[in-house]
Length: 209
Image: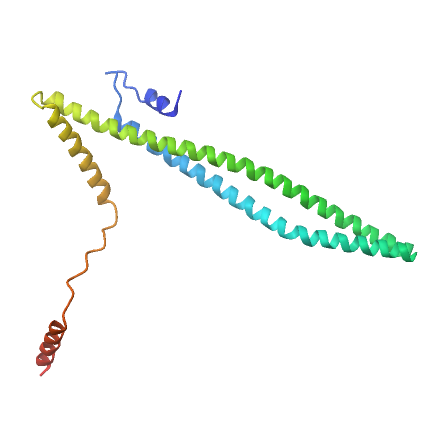
């Protein structure tokens, strides 16, 4: 059963067989917020993994260069017959190769984790947008139900009036939503002329005299 189907079933009113539209909207809104928070958590995880990958990728060239230098030094010592020095350099080379292997393995693991969390984020994003669509549908359904209730209470209401009532309900809801938004920047005042400015300045001078 879909998320919307589960919500609608859980909000089914056993007394009259109907649904409480406001509760449906509230539940979907709550689920949408939880889904959004889940997306944000996954996004943070992806960003952190991306930073770790970037750091490892910056380190690898230096590790590779150090490993190559140790190898060349050990080879040169062997050619020169300096067995003791060659053994010491070989020990250093082994240590550098272990570091390089560990870093490469860590990078491979991080890339796999990045792919996993990116997949989860995409899935969470689809779920979030699905909830947003369901919420929009639920709000529309609530408007329709309010209009139908108005029709039942006033049998003389015609279909045209019902459509107008539905439009009015939507307009009121949009107005309520708009009321919570910051006020728009007021329109610019009328452009002043030089004569107006001069007249004001002359009046100020007269007031000082």
